[in-house]
Amino acid sequence: MAKKTLLLIEDEKAIRDMLRFSFSHHEFELIDAEDIASAMKVLSVQIPDLIILDWMLPDMSGIEFLKKIRKMENIKHIPVIMLTAKAEEENKIMGLVSGADDYITKPFSPHELAVRIRTVLRRGLIKSPDDKLMLDTICVDTNTKTVSIKDELLHLTANEYKLLYFFMTHADKVYTRDQLLDHVLGKSAMVSDRTIDVLIKRLRAKLKPHDCHRHIKTVRNTGYLFARQYENSSSC
Ligand code: CA
Image (cartoon, rainbow, N blue to C red; front, side, top):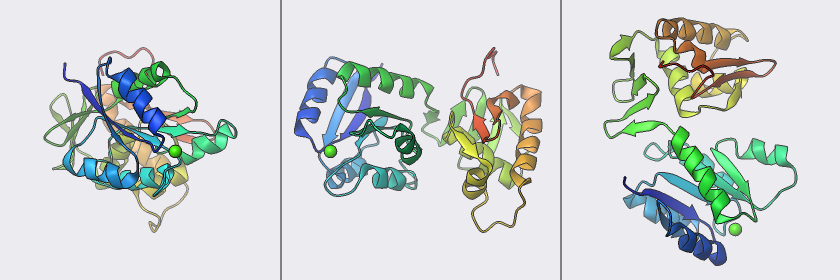
């Protein structure tokens, strides 16, 4: 199996050296960058499988860069693990790094980070080179903006497609109705409180014949979550 490429963006040389040394024995290929400018140079020629991103960097904060990454078409799906130096205020950190796939607080051991990396990579979307996203049997073709399950085309409206696409690229995280509205329909959309509920209901109904509706979970008093896996997961 080909080694997974990791891009480490971290200004502390000691951490870069430690991880480069530790990961040389692993199934990972580590590229490191000391700041965002060097990372951008790497990203212009190579797309890593995962990015390890430090919070405090000299030229831009990791959080700011994370937001940028999520808007960049060619790299927005790359999983990101944030390195944070702050152990306190866990809730606040979680809110800030909500665009990240995981975060780890310094000091950490290379072993601990390797475990997190494997978990994130394992649950990641399978992306084929022809711009298709696969999750279980759901296949989203981002070129034609169509969705199929086991080669059967789903007839989705534009908004249902946008919602499913958002869910698949942001799985396993809870989003409020407002957040989903912003992401899926945009802030300017003329909508009522029920818009997202109605959209979810329709999408679930279209996924149900394939038993894939169970990926969409209602989180009481909060919103919705698209689970990569669900309990009693048969082949979906
Ligand atoms: Ca730093």
